[in-house]
Amino acid sequence: MAGRPYLIFTTGRFKRSSGGLVALHKLCHDLRMLGEAAWVTHGPSEPTFQAPRRLPTARELHRDFIVVYPELVVGNPLGCPRVVRWLLNTPELTRSTGFYQREQASDLIFRFSNYFDYRGLGRDLGLLKTLYTDYRTFRDHGGLRSGSCYLVKKGKVTNPPAHPADSVLLGEHNDWEAAARLLNQKEIFYCYDTACYWATLAALCGCPALVIPDGRRTPADWHAAFPNYDYGVAYGPEELPHARATVPRVADHLRSLEARDLGLIREFVRRTQSAFADASTPRGSAPLWPAARLWLWGAGGQVEKLRRSLGKRWAAVRGPRPR
Image (cartoon, helix red, strand yellow):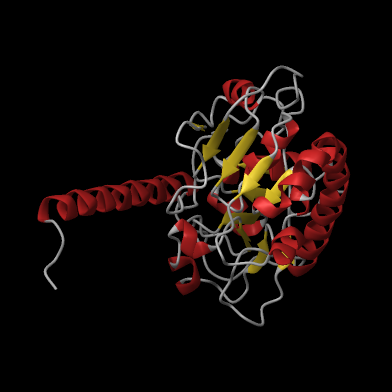
């Protein structure tokens, strides 16, 4: 039986190219599959997900809801007294270091993977992972292959680059069908982002993936943090023979991990419902209308993007500073 309802703060419209948004919408879907009441703040969602949009009233938020924020969100823009923060990446890598400064002592914090860093030592961080794999799109068509493709995302291209000069950039992340066709044409996929699900999707398409190590983790630590990379994916060129040999095992392995992830979501429900079980409404009046708070949060994000863009343009015009 469902306890307190969940509102997943999705930061913007659903985009297939955003692994964070896919994870947030999939969490909403999985919670509903387990019988929990859950909604997202922005829609529409992926057609195969049950992740409807809803913005509760200020009274409902203050009295009933648990809000889940990704690490990109600073503070508590919806003003809900029951807050869960879900680290979908290391905050420094997503330019969200303000997350540390405006944390509430009562916040529950979960992380998507033990690979991601969090400076709050001593905090009991839960593990919450939910993956979505479109097996109909990402599969091996059994055709001829030649050459390679690569992806940078949140990583950095090495000097010299690990990929050949004629390698093709996997650019259209939002068009999964086009990406799957390209991956079905190539013999190897180079990935500079060490926490990117595209390496697994490439392996599903029959294209072994070579993740370029960034020096932050040993191969053993990296594999322990990302079990979905056990087959079809190499962490460094030394593991390429294993990756090539195990490509056929990727799909079955992912399905077994999906069953494990449902256990993590059940534990997430148990912990959050237990932590916020007190039926009493916190003291103080309900916050400003959620719709207005959501608009103000979005407007603030646009201002920050404009500030960064103008800063880059000014730096380009000014040139390097004299030493």
